[in-house]
Image 1 (cartoon, rainbow, N blue to C red):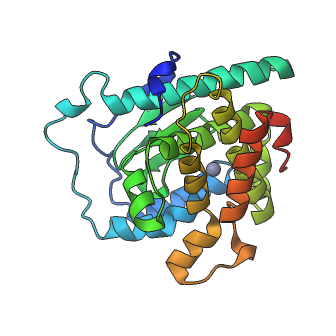
Image 2 (image 1 turned 45 degrees about the vertical axis):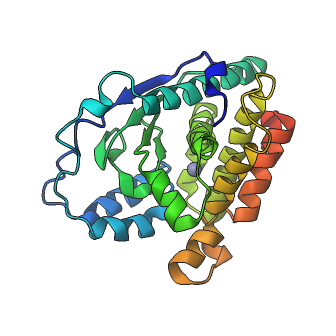
Length: 277
Ligand SMILES: [Zn+2]
């Protein structure tokens, strides 16, 4: 465990985990996936590489409400909510400084914790697409049970630092949104998509660098984050799904690229080096 208690800042986290999934009426899961595809094409960013796998998993489950009747585990600020808020708060601090240097205004993002599905300004946010950022409401949507999937399906080591990396990658998309770079996704080509994703990885590295002086990470813990970055590379995901990878269809970058850009941000701590676009 990293020493999160060394961080005093907190981000804006809303806990919807006890609410249960939103009613999606008669729309099938395919319909939901289609809606996400539309959001994606309209400039929303989803971690779409995981979509197919998670879709399969979801199809094996019934759509009955899975949230436990006993919602007391989410009452008050539970440990996960505190963790997410701390990671978000430390991102805010890092980006407030970076934006000050750029003479830009940094608006803090929100983070919604949910189970299965919830309403977002980009449509229904569903667990099946993994953690994602909706630019329309400047909010990160996270069902943290996704991380069990990351470990069991993609062989990521898991752990708190890996999860913090994923949240910070999503904050990276928020930064791109504020700086006007996310709009370029509407171009829709894979090359632009990869550039956007690798830049978000690099931004996550810049965040990790900002915590070095506070001695938050144990030696070797940054490795967890790099493993997580590599585990969600398009090549690894495609190999798991279809047995081979096709670089022309990459939308997030290869494992090697994702790790390399995270490292570049981490080594320098400078947002300017994240010039993937
Ligand atoms: Zn992303």
